[in-house]
Length: 526
Image (tube, rainbow, N blue to C red; front, side, top):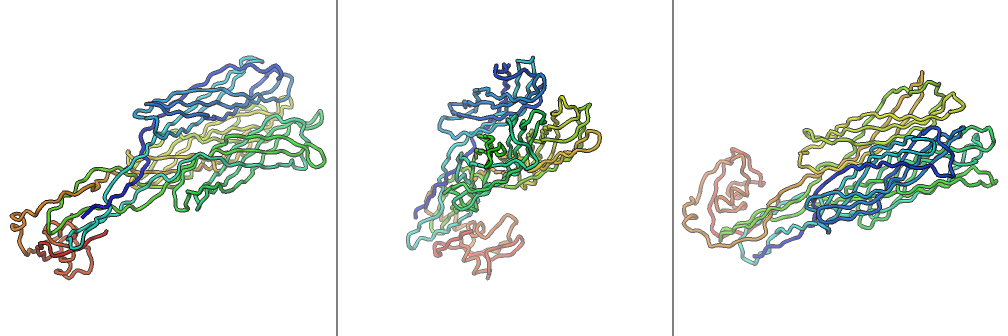
């Protein structure tokens, strides 16, 4: 008799850590730009350029890409853009250089204040989350290779486990040509450009990853002609495509975090030589994780009626997927703009989902956060017609996850599916938004596995003390395997003696049990 062993490769969570960094800098307006009169809008993106794991810590290097829209002295709009680099060290207990480290981040707050007409104060709050994993290998017996004539009873158990099949960063490119509507004047110069994602969806396919969503484009431009007012264009550009992934299978479970890594928009002349078209080039950064669920056949127990077999066990750690779903949360709120002048029209509305807290409840997760809404609107004041304002709207969402515990490992990817801002009376605005929260919950599983077997001769005194035939009443914790092993017989013998058609027994059921000494050979796989 020889144990058949298998190795199971797992990505095991080693540690998590998070930190917040504050970037505070004073920026001088370049000599080529005009003086500031009022800061209207500030947006930014965090770009992580390098992640270096070391002993007990991770070094993260990146930058904040920002742009600020301001009103010039004497009227008109101008954009100031730049970068603020950062470098941060995050302590992660138990981390080794060989471990796999992933970093996620969010721009929690960004403020730009005018110190004076040539100096801008920029403050940003950035959250960094570090997750460390290590590749672990569990060795366990999966079956028994028996020689002819051996009378060994074998119980095979099926265990559902999940392991990470693919972890990769990749890119997906979107290139679009956008034309101005016929009622818009030609472009003299671009004043402000923004791109964001809405309703992003990904799913694994055989050999590929499918991605779709909407690219939201907003731009302000100065039109041709001296008295032409500031113009704007807001477009929703749908995109879809496949990213080649040979390791991907349709049945895999995916968690894909999609961000904009690069964006570029340039005006160009159309067929008639007029500046009425734009070239858009966007590169999406995809942090891809694909999980494979499988049923692992492991040796659950072993005994013999001819000899004493003592299984050698050790505790092994696996992971199971409890849930993979999407929680959708609706936000509807009426707000009033802090504006003395009459608001004529909403030019641009944008939103960012910030997840503040995830807490475990009975059979579920409670997700709490805020939707940060930024509006750009047109007023009745011709000297300062474009104005901006921001609001923070809280949200709460409950996701059903049966069996979730405080030890469960969860991942949440928040996203904005859609948002609208509609003018009401008296400078009121109605905000409606749909927030999408993609959730994956895994449960760590401690499972004893058989790694070896000790073989000893039968204890004849103990065996002779057992009655040859006995009547037995099935107890609540019993199954047929436990009963047969306890009374030194086999399941086949019990079933024949009691004329059982199936292996299931019920509490209170009466059985006749006949002791055996090495005259049967069989196995159970359950």
